Length: 544
Image 1 (cartoon, rainbow, N blue to C red):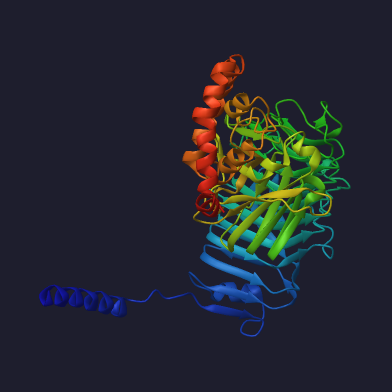
Image 2: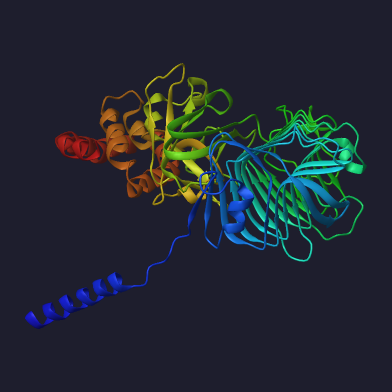
């Protein structure tokens, strides 16, 4: 024993020494503007791989990142770029463009929190707010506005040329410009962005139309682009919300595409345009099937969503009861989108699940700062229909996992009357639950009864046949045993489900034969009732 202990002690010592003497991973330097460098450009010129540039509040000249990697440029509230310089783009219809910020031939360049305002820039033929050219990275939590050129203006342009441009936009607002986001021979994702108010006065080609998001280069064969747009608002653009061309592809989910003058989404020679699960401004769907924003041919739009709510909260609750009878309580921080489906978005529910038909979707693009998210789906007396309120306690939430409606692993019901609702079903979602936080990437939920498809029908059918009435006092203890001891556990629930399949025909046979009814009552049901009454304290306590 001593020898074994000594070996274990030595191993622990070696492991700890290894941890202590391991070479540290050096973090990048933090560079401050303007306290260390007067301009953002000067800080970029002095930066190295892994550095972070922190920009204080104030007005700044534009900047160019060229041939750099792993640089983050983060602005404090009030940091705004108001002027720029010429940038060589040489792609599609753009040669040189005036830009407030440009990233060229660089990898993993992240711009966050700095606003870009072009209202003081005039007389430029081509004007772009933020441009990524043959580069990767992200743009987050900022506003780009008032980007207007005499021929072309765009808030954000993601452009490929000899290399590959892949850029993520999150929490970005582009407003009051000629064009919102251009994706040319590149890949882009937009999460929780707002693209609104594209209203050009002049311009050429498609830029005359005021396009929120342009995927591909119209009339040119430059190679297809790809865009994924989720939980975003594309609104009030004159005239098109999203324009897809040049064999490019679009996947748009859980967005509000509303108030765009001519079209919400146009497929003009694009490839796959998947615009399912979006809100088009009216419950009837997009025009021409409904009265919402119009769509062109070649756009997959069914099913669509009813109105939704998008909100970022920290240790708070997203109230979506007005549109989806739903609340989402967040422990931590998360951006949450809640929508209501007009119909079942998945397959048929299990045979032992009585659905209330209240289909919702909860989308959380980034759960890294969330500890737990609790979904509460409220119901009314009308939602319950004719269901006996004794079975209300078996209401649960299920989620569509892509193949079936599975029960949420940490789910229950609150039956207290709240603000006109009869109660709510809840599911707590964490990293260790099913669904997990990682599954909230557009996840359908439905509420209903666990157990027999029609719980109030045929309760205690055999016993009812034996006593000749469903009001016999002996039935109360049988119902209580089923509700308290059987249904709350999986094995008991399976037994009850089996009983509901085989019980009714047996009960029907018993009810038609007086002698058999007496034998079953005296020799079978009465003894069970006596045993349950005698052992009541044991199983009622266990089930509570």
